Length: 226
Image 1 (tube, rainbow, N blue to C red):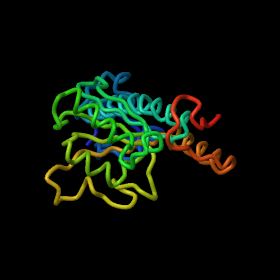
Image 2 (image 1 turned 30 degrees about the vertical axis):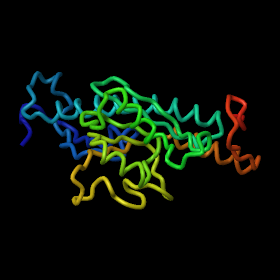
Image 3 (image 1 turned 180 degrees about the vertical axis):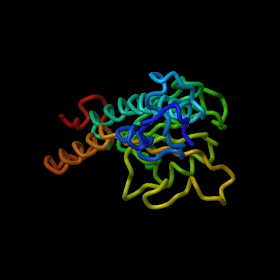
């Protein structure tokens, strides 16, 4: 029961306060004793507000790193690749960056997530990325989900669902399969800039009919003009 000395409190749900930032995150207790505590001179009788502040700060941190992944996606856009970017973070520091290079390398496995995992493993001199967080602008595909499990990545954060190839939730739920020996935490955030970049890319592709040509290099390689 709320403290009787503090009346007129409004019940505020976490989803209302974070609807612009969070679409899917671990359940958090509702913050129902927040208003007027300071003005009434009353103490919090629960830790819900502290939980709220913790998750708000954590979600803002995730958004910052998604914006860094978006910078990689923008590089892919300029080179005529499907604009998907990924980064890997360890101890709050970016240790690898990558963008989709499937056409450039003519390698079907050269997805942003795969390239970021390879670079991180080389930097750490270990295939085990236990304490690392992978940020991708788009939902990882089935292949990338397999690599995430193999690399023992702790957390996966992404923005845009992939209805055609998504292996996290859209087509399959590979990372949550209880038969796996490793199941990373998964967080999906509402991240409109990544979706807008994808739509812009495919709109230009449909209009111009240009497709990246294999073997060409450099910034003039079938560049998509914004």
